Amino acid sequence: MAPAAASGGSTLPSGFSVFTTFPDLLFIFEFIFGGLVWILVASSLVPWPLVQGWVMFVSVFCFVATTTLIVLYLIGAHGGEASWVALDAAYHCTAALFYLSASVLEALATITMQNGFTYRHYHENIAAVVFSYVATLLYVVHAVFSLIRWKSS
Image (cartoon, rainbow, N blue to C red; front, side, top):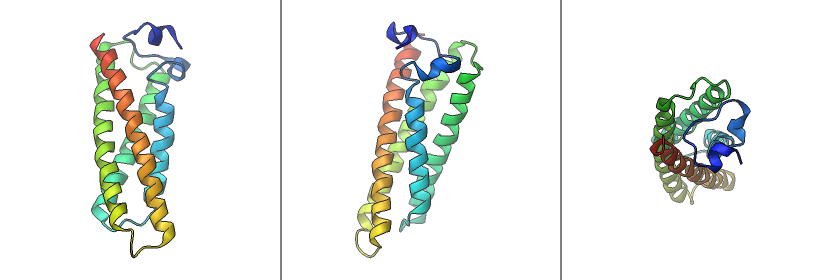
């Protein structure tokens, strides 16, 4: 673990130290599970188009925003400024809330489609729900530790 994370430092990492500090290490897993949710929801059949649209918006938005933040942190665009710490905390709190709402709606849609849909579509939606809740958990943990970092900055 990097010294900044071990000592409760309040600065954002730059370069490849993004992949060695906690909670910034969670970016990798948010990227992976967010991408899985995006793929599964895009390929599945959801009975309510509005629900599928919201889940797709959340997964694509968070995927793109997470990718953008990773790249910006890798190139050191934040310059160690405290405003970026607040941005990081605000983004992860928003993403956690968005993913929680999307996960609940996707689970509700999956429960209602138990009868009348093919076995494959039903199981794709179950996988999307599971990965969506994993992504929600990752964003919540990242949000909590980002808020701690923001508070100490």
